[in-house]
Amino acid sequence: MNPDSIRQFLADGEGLTIEYKECANGLNNSVWETVCSFSNRYGGHLIIGVEDNGTPVGVNPHSVQQIKKNFVNILNNPQKTSPSLFLSLEEVIFDGVLLLYVYVPVSSQIQSCSGRIYDRNEDGDFDITNSADLKIYSGGEPELIEGDVFKTIIPLKPDANGSETLSGDLRTCTTQDGTQDKRLSMLLEYSTVPRSRDEMQRHYGISTREYFRKNVLKPLLESGQLKMTIPDKPNSRNQRYVKA
Image 1 (cartoon, helix red, strand yellow):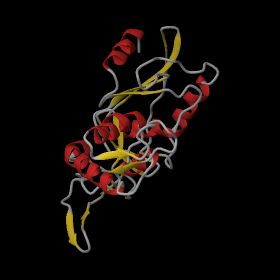
Image 2 (spheres, helix red, strand yellow; image 1 turned 120 degrees about the horizontal axis):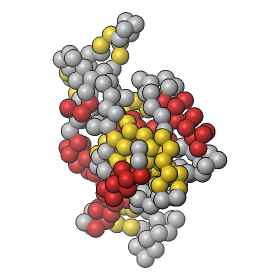
Image 3 (tube, rainbow, N blue to C red; image 1 turned 45 degrees about the vertical axis):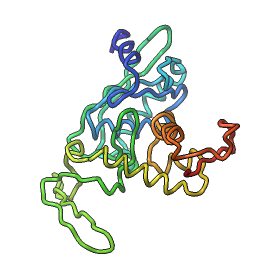
């Protein structure tokens, strides 16, 4: 990776296939969620040492080797990442600071992180493990069972060892627009009592704080569907949000 390509990624901004992480001294959980979501969607470019707004701040040079080692170890730990991914971080000097870069390719199987499945939508990573709209093509016909709710039974394919595994192409059949509309409706119902931003973000199932603020919280406030409990102090630590 060369500095000119990094410059272009920073000019393009975060999106469906580009993600920035600050992580100056170590990797946080959102890194694995992004790797998982890139694998399940179209692949993507992950740049570490950059703020959400695209400002390169760099990675602590004393932490680089440990960060690179942890990245490889986690992606090869079946309890954390399944199936394993063979990726490594590349060091890039950009405008005098040290960045780490990796391209995450599309996986041929459903990728999970700590037992959860993430998908990519715009510049956010969504936990869709329990989504009612998650439909996974696995090479067999789903079976519908009528009970308290309709459940989809997804046939599993045997792997090389004879064990049944979840596989298929997540990209061809997740309905993101419908899912997002339902998530917003569910979030508003959840907020009929005052909720903190963190509570709402967890309920919505997205890990990226800036994406949640720009694309979920702010539009709901501006449209009048949501209101602040302390409107004269929008940045108060005691701020809560409630359905209007």
